[in-house]
Length: 398
Image (cartoon, rainbow, N blue to C red; front, side, top):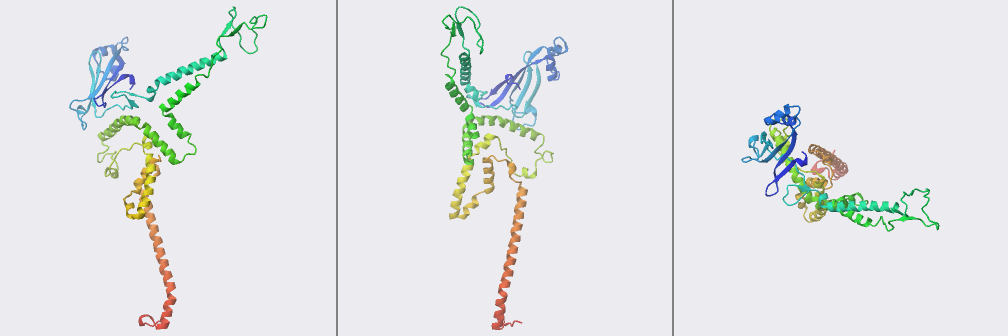
């Protein structure tokens, strides 16, 4: 939807609860858009070749329905009511509703409870205009320094300032020029310091310095880069919360549409696997800002492992409280590694089973070798004892 057509409505807490969309349609477009359900005047204009392009304003109003509820299965009882009508005649062209809020609104920053957001450029607009003004003046000063305006004696004529060209009549008998620059104190670099200061302010205001630090961070260790990512997340975090709040509506609407189409009903072609239905299902955002928020977990895990090693020396049972699998997942996410690096549960189980069988085989081989060695080493001893004492336990040896 074009932004200029939308008028947002929020409640007392600043939450989105409706909107008005005002747009202009030609008569023939309106008939096609609303399947002929328009006023008689619009129909007559649409059928007249001379008036078919006459324009009419239509309003799409969406607001909380009185008596509607979230778990409604009937669109007539949905939470949000939707009405399309002609602005001039008030004729209702379409009447329906939405189970979830239909707009996804991403705001960088909000001023109080205003329904509209503002980007970082809005707060820096005065500096941007000042930078543009100084840059323009710098270009003018550079042009004046290279080709300044010329004052001539009496005669009004155009000077040819190209190299090697002749300008007759522009010096007197003593060789003094009859012209000179009108501006002799032009300094093209006078505003350079101010321009650079404003550019640095814009880089900070637009968070460009944070990303540039990472790009120029040659020689940094992974820990240093991770710390920097955490600082960036802390700085951008409050603004990303507004964006994630807008995306929350998108998640709710997507899950709601899938649910109404039977995605979670038994026997449906879209039904999830049994392993998913029997476990807790949640949504995890994998946007860069969310990965940056988890960057601080890596340092915490490294410190905790050091503590755990010391504590386990005093009490080995304390290691039983630590979940190594969850630690692996958290470390992977904090470092920004993709999930495909982790093997599937069935693959992990097969590897562990194979490792157990190989260990059992090694144990059997070691036991067999040990028994064979004992038998080999004990045979001479048994023979000697038999010869000296007439056999073991009174039994003679052959």
